[in-house]
Image (cartoon, rainbow, N blue to C red; front, top):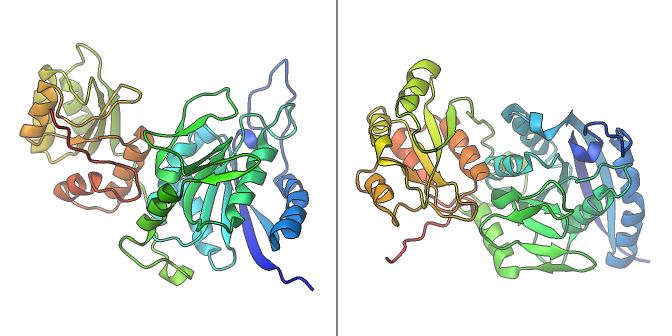
Length: 365
């Protein structure tokens, strides 16, 4: 008589393309998916896993949200986090069905909020909805299930499984609206690849997991799960520099709109125009943090390459983003603001590698 390892998987339904939340088209049908249809997809895979891996899976679904991911709000992140927290003792892994447009933001939010989680939380979705010709929803959902119960490597923490990539939650970046492999690990390698076989980068996975017990022991039960689930995005102004940008814009956003933090996409390696220096000095005087990144798609903002960036560094006028994605730096900043920590603490924490989101490297020039 066979003895099976039992695994309980909760599929959290939030909507998005995978659920059919797309515009009507002359070349495709407009099909909305019943959340329970995703459970029926898993039936055959559950039988195969039981036969080949001796794992007996019991999947359940939670109809939490049904929104296009472009409409995903921080309160929706909090709802997903609370659902995982409330069901933590009842399930061994969580799969979040999510739209692709803001998956990187949600993945980052769950990563920072669930500080010491001891179970897999896997985000996935589709480029083509379930029920449409050419849908990738079945493959992505089944691959997420495979990852959730994978027994050959230790798997825990927040990650995305999409197309052929397995990506840590703090590095999920969408690069295209067309390909079946739209996501990449921003500025780093993936945790692994998934196709007919799964190839795990053991060093990357160990590093991913090591962050989970950096400050607190891994949470065996919900009572010791460290959860910080609030985000203050409304206080952040996110701006892209262009030649001739008004220096008065920053003061106006603070004094007229109540902004208490900034994300700024400068030129080069985080090199703003010098005519904007008075704005940076004003923000420092007001103790308003400004994180400076680069407009270069694969660039690194380090304040070490050009004179204007070096000026920011010399006079401590801004926080360099280094290799953080715009998704991670925005979510991280909003998460820190919600914790009501002071200006100096935010400056320190933004440069602290909490979950693999930043690599602070000193260039030798």
